[in-house]
Image (cartoon, rainbow, N blue to C red; front, side, top):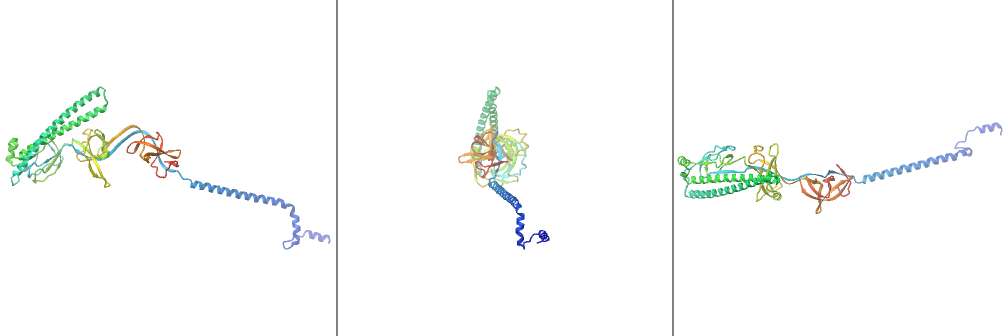
Length: 448
């Protein structure tokens, strides 16, 4: 082979895949660089494997943390209120009505033809004023039976008059005794020997006895008028002077007002024939007003004479003050709004504010009475919704550090919205109000 042939062979390009004879030469030429490239490739592959493993581990860890957080119970939102010391009042509120204490229903003393009444509710009458006239009907005014009944009525009226006078004497004696007691207590109070409360109680008792005496005097006047009317019905006009002579001339019977006051109600307005005893008008003194409230018998046993009362919802700008005068000894049954029969009893309340403050009140007005059964100025208290029954005792959830802890408590008096805490919780402790069934001992909570 010549030199030209060798040169041409050296410049010949490498053989292709279709030329197997040229491959060993190419491999021999590239062999020195293969280990370096191989190690680089291995390093890249190892780094990629480690990177994939790290990313997979991070994804698995993130999924595990998310699952734990998702399965972990969330804090239960609760209303949290701290306990505190302050004033606590135990009271009961009931609807009531006003009524005139001394009211008198004037009825027809005998059967006859009644004249039309010119009176209207609210009119003022004086004792002895003629309210109506009863004239005899066509038939005789008194037959033997009616006369016997009239004589019996006269006897009953005389007995009632004696009873009324005895009651008036007894009321007068009680009034004098109460005034003496008031004077004695006032002297002791002025000397500083006793507190103010006995003086107020003595003043209240003196006022009540004075009103009872006035009521007894009015009852005596009514009884006296009943006696006079019974005598007139029997035709004994001569015992009553000029009024009886005028009755004989005019042939009618005057129905007179037994006491001074105002007309509360007119039962019989039109003229007509009425039997004896028919109610005609009702008379009373609106200044002698009291409040009647019916309460449950379970509450009435806690009410005492002299219990302070606040009269609300009567239409005035400010509440009125009063005191319990009497708890009636006999109860009655009344269905509630749900149709359940309840045993209730009337509580009579005397207004202690001046007449000028409640002058607009009348007979039969609706009011809201708040009776204070117990009160204290400095007690540890918590909302009523924070305590609940736990077997035979009481418990509460104390909120501290985002957790609810069940603690036993001992409660005392229960107010309208708060309850007295005797033991189990200190002042300033945060408690859950109306926790619900989701709150358990040791549960995580979120205070609102």
